[in-house]
Length: 248
Image (cartoon, rainbow, N blue to C red; front, side):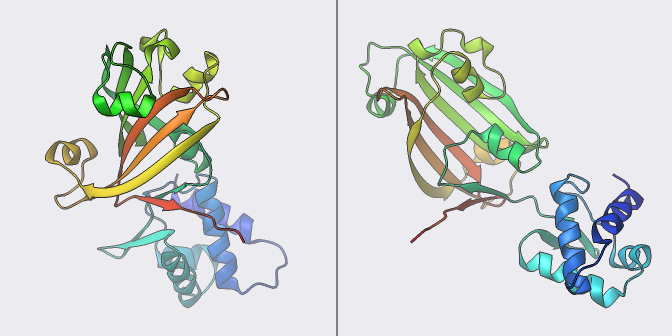
């Protein structure tokens, strides 16, 4: 979207009476613009000068608003005096949601690039995780998950074949497919670890050498206790944050 459209949105959002300091009103307006996808994740926001002139406020006020959003992690300073909307994504560990649901809730468009999908015998780790014998076949799905066409994670899901009658019909969302076939999980157990990315993982995720991955393993259960899914998702550590809400 053009800078003028962004300025128009900010002006409209900031209009009206408010007892808040002007820099806070500007900060909230920029947050609203990001939430409404007027300014998209990874996009460059208008310069301090353009914001100052377009909104008729001082550059000191603009700078203070931007510095506050940088401190919150919503904006990033880049070389060349550019300020961009952070591409980091937060994932709550308190709720069981799909990757697609997570991305859409943040105004990002989820996508996937299929690496492989196959029907095979389970590995020893998959047998233990799914609680099945070696004789039972599984569907193994490996995908590169994207947000606004940016690689975010590598996902490998294993499901007993009896829950996936048509694996070729699975689109961008596995959970939408499971819901349509009456096999949507109702609870899950998760564990998380970190490790360096391999050369292949760096290539798929387009990350530099030395990048760490946040690895989430999830076992998902149906209401009757059957294990329907075992998934290992390797998230880019440079763009993904996991958030846990604690209550007393």
